[in-house]
Length: 134
Ligand SMILES: [Fe+2]
Ligand SMILES: [Fe+2]
Image (cartoon, rainbow, N blue to C red; front, side, top):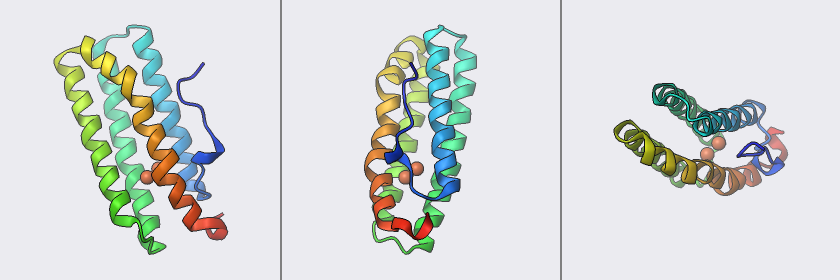
């Protein structure tokens, strides 16, 4: 069973953002599968780099929508995006230094790390944008 499952709660009602949420969930599930298969750390590292790049560009897209909508929670949401990217970089550094402990950290944290953001910050954004962007 994939680690992260798509939920309608993850939908913001903005097709481009929702499409990316689905893609990111797919990428996170894929890197987990690699970790389960005890794949070569270099392959996992390159997967993580792809995830980092995709997430950074996803956050930029979401932030653009928030600015256009003059979203009142913009600053807090953007800060949280920056925190998440910092945390992901830390996990990637740990994995590069010590694949075994890095793998454990990623297994424990990666799904929550992103799923919680979807379910809180992105869900509030969805509520605020309402149907206007549906
Ligand atoms: Fe998002
Ligand atoms: Fe977000």
